[in-house]
Length: 422
Image (cartoon, rainbow, N blue to C red; front, side, top):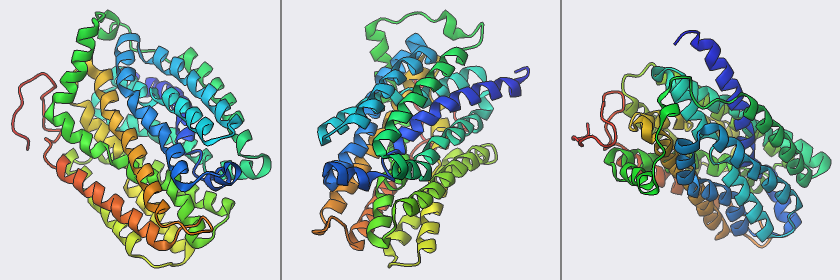
């Protein structure tokens, strides 16, 4: 493509600004979770639900998002739905009970649901396919600034003004990012097949979704996608802060600093994997290698006694770095879908990501909650059990994914005859 570098800069910069808001909301309650619990007298189980409801709402809405992307385009889908996040952020700031917190965070999850998938559709239509993983990793990496804002900066602002004010400010800034995105985002280049698409009837629309779900290659990739992001986000997005508070006695600012480094590691890891995708000839083997190392790190965390803070922080940072290989899975999934099913395909695949985060964060709530002491803290055995449980779930997912065909050697798209996996 002529002047692809210039086009890529404009597209990635614009999409990343909108994606920052989505990423902030994903991780925004981790560092201030103990403060929210104290303010509203939440239990560990309730906190797990509040933390995870964002992801279950996000996951449930992925199929509608895919339909909207194919029918209306990414621009209208992203900007329209993200307005719901603005309302949800204001609602979260004003909430006075567990129910109100849960409903507000659910709205935030629905509103954020199209941002990354819409971005990947735009990248697929504007930029070269052989660099898809690299461009996607840039959006993920730059958008990761939102995760950074959710760590130490949020901790400091919450200390200064209160956690409610954090969400009032987030709502205002999100609205501004949407205005910018609406003015810049374009669905596809002139002459692209998207502009000449035929509007499908309801039967064909949902038939396309069923066609995707029934595909065996999609099922294998879905299995690993269900666990990858949830592995990291169950820790950096929620239970890591509690672990550092309960076991190491760290205060808000100290926890925020460690979570900041963990988030930076996630961003760096995504960028590294985006680059490695262009180096490795076999995408499947790269995913399996990354997953196995992640399992080993989780097992080390589960076996560790209480050690120096810098040592446990280093392990957590390395876990976030090595476990951020989801961009490769999205590239694998992208290769499965034809243009007419592109929006529905990657959005349906993305259902696994956020459903997995909800399930693993909620699993953490029940595991830690079963060990909680009278003072509200949990002992080391609770977190050892959590780390080992996550490792077990990831191992099962890797075994299922190992049955898939490597996406760099396959030419098959959904709707073509199935051949043996290799």
